[in-house]
Image 1: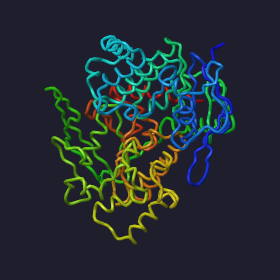
Image 2: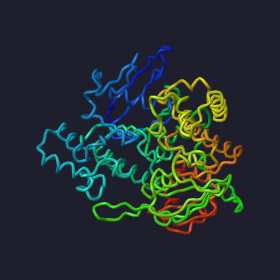
Image 3: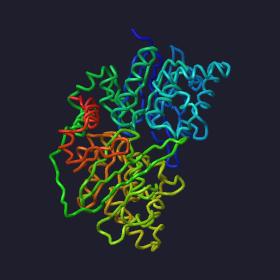
Image 4: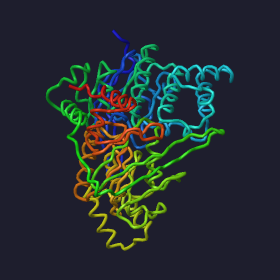
Length: 523
């Protein structure tokens, strides 16, 4: 019988707002054992992260435990914060928010090492290199000298795992650690975590929307809804439930991961956007890195072009070049409905809209939703209060959000609500083209369904054209008419989405598809 690391009994948490108390966790019972990976699954806002934060005494301001208790080694953990960084480590969803942007990786790792062991600088440096090598990072000395923004998503997450295991904890809380990573990198990160967990015999609380990951790595799972545990037990038993909430999650996941839709075509007479021979290079210590090399793609009216590729392949770089956020070395962009192609970002605002992966990073936290929606109009000089109000009311109706939300701030909205606001902002100037950069990557399966349905509806009624960037081939298969595969800054394969995903010609494309298929094992 495995040793119990944490025992949670009747845990309830409240948030105190100006409108009164709101229940966040309701009478939660759960045990976390040594040497096991426990999956924690549930929709956005179900209380998963709040439960994790309770374990390490990191509840946000205004939140408090109102009843129940958490025990460790059969002793009440009166000061859970004392366990943080010693017995319990946490890996967060977005490593950029965990890392100090103005300190090198080596400097941050040294601080952690010295806090843990008090070793000399040389001893600490030797241990740091050992842990970075353990998570299979190449060129360790180079990594230590880099700043967080100079690392890829996969590299940053490996660094965070190295940080976590360097304290040799009893428990690692992994909160959505593969969000935003491509299929290959997701598998690499999860396999690495599984390997380390077995080697060190530590417990892992795996919080994830990826049911495939939970099925593959967790022998036990707990399902959360509205702050409560609604199902808990062996993964096979829980995922085999025929009725109830858990069953609905599985069915939704199966639907999203259905193999492919029927092929959809394109009308060559309705070419709306043409990208020709885009090039972008960076110089690093005298070495030239070709981020984008001779990329040419076409987008047709009322259709969706899916852009896929692993992290670092150049997808977001290409999107920024299209939006003129990033200068290109050479190449041309033509919007076929216009006599003159836009020359700068402001000329593009009423032609091409954009929805980014991290909506919080794209919002001004001091602006209300109303002001956020007004901003695109202000940028082009539209200030008529009556017409802008009508526009905002209409766009809120289009995205199915209550007008009451207009006076709220971004942090008070759920992830799904914020993504709808992102879409609304992109639509404020009635563009004909939307660039969607991983718009569903951080959303649970139910919210993902709603966002995809919204995008399909908007495309149908407003004749929009989408450039849809995603790591998730299941989403691409649902949304895209055409697909372009990007590898090391070059388009290596294009075609009808069904044709490419069913009969890929390039080995790289075949590997992407093979890597994504393991997620689809939910029966």
